[in-house]
Length: 287
Image (tube, rainbow, N blue to C red; front, side, top):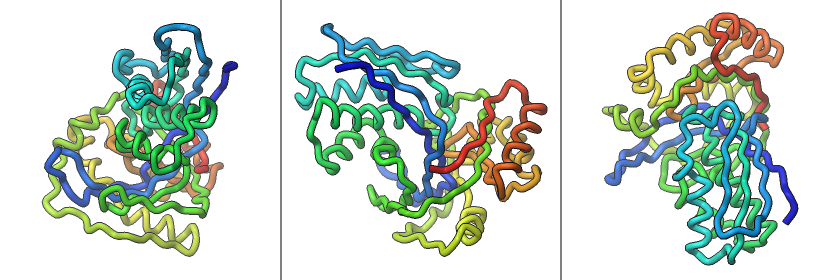
């Protein structure tokens, strides 16, 4: 196998509502998830060795457990299932997407590699089997397999896909906080859970933005309580010209702003960089 270069795209939760807390400590959520044109870069090649060589590098390798991460877990699971027969790999992952930001880069890395191995080895797995394997690695991994807009209905494993492109202009600001998903969920106490819905419909972009704006992220209060810096960023983004709304994505700490135009998003980025020069700040288009 020659050296292959892959793009591992990041996801954004446009809103997130908790519908039920499960006995195992996990939660059912409803959320509209989209993907944007920001990505980690993965180089992979087969090596004549008795073990894999996995290297994380780049500005955002900090905080990644090199002994236990989604990539290592995926390869271990595939070998346990006897799908990789004496094959080992050199994998270099350039972390352009901040770890612990709520942008799902770890899940995306695993999904990207699973898709690649399925096609190139090949593993010859059908969609259903791919999703079953992905689900064992992490909750978000199956969602990352196709990089399509999806709506989580709040019912167990129910995912609706959208053929429509959302065409949103996004500003993402990461305040250099590696957010603990476990801690944020644990400290989120919702007295009244949101009702699960099995549909989502919008006629046009205006209707879509109005709907999302009226929603919220149920994890945001807890994230702000644990990491107060997040609130300042959300408020700063909200008051910038052309911003429809701002909130955290996932469990944070990255904050997103949806803008009326890319021109406004770029102007907002310049102002954010002046105010917070050390923060990771990017504009992006949904895919």
